[in-house]
Image: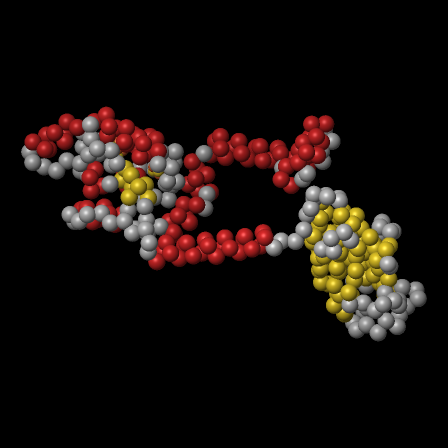
Length: 310
Ligand code: SF4
Ligand code: SF4
């Protein structure tokens, strides 16, 4: 909740009971949903609600390093006693003793020995569980490990494992990440510290005044993204010189332009009324631009809208 409001102010208001009702309501909703999801639904969230397993399944391939049960080494699974008997008879015996410790350790209840599954969140707990078992039995660890489906196939065919980190898929993903990252860095580096949004009145879209002039109403919001109070002048471009601009509740005018003060790291919503005389010569709908200019730094921001006379 502190993300959506001025954090120190909201903390103080919450403590004194002066915060808006919506703040208490949303804290209640978030607390309740967190408790239900993390306290009761738990792995159901991973299995049925989280989109990550679907994304992971689309991204991975037979060369990708995933938490993998090395079936070539583990199968046929059997107890230590049965494995000894099989060896005496010259029959194959895998390293998996079917103790189910990997399943017990898995937070989503996956049996990784059945292969890669949607429920697997790649946490690696089954690796640790199985390594503990292997160590106790005096066998080499790594029966479950980060490996690829391709290597299991290759070992089953008597070939040595191969790891291919650079392949078309990884090159494409890297390129996409670099492009998206560059766009984000550029957007962050060039982002302005002033913004303005404009909303034209919908009903009525214009008002004809008693002297034949026409007035349009707008709601504008000025964004001050710096941690200091700033003073903006409001200019409207695209209107005749005899047009009048009234920022309601902001009577201070400098050089005929309304002055608006916006507090640090905050926004200010203002009602603006623009009027033109009867013989303004404007067409039915004229494009206009709202420009706010920081009087100290000269930094400005613009938003486009229209002025209607009929
Ligand atoms: S990596 Fe984690 S989620 Fe996946 S099977 Fe192993 S314990 Fe379960
Ligand atoms: S923990 Fe290892 S040995 Fe035990 S069942 Fe799982 S894979 Fe087999």
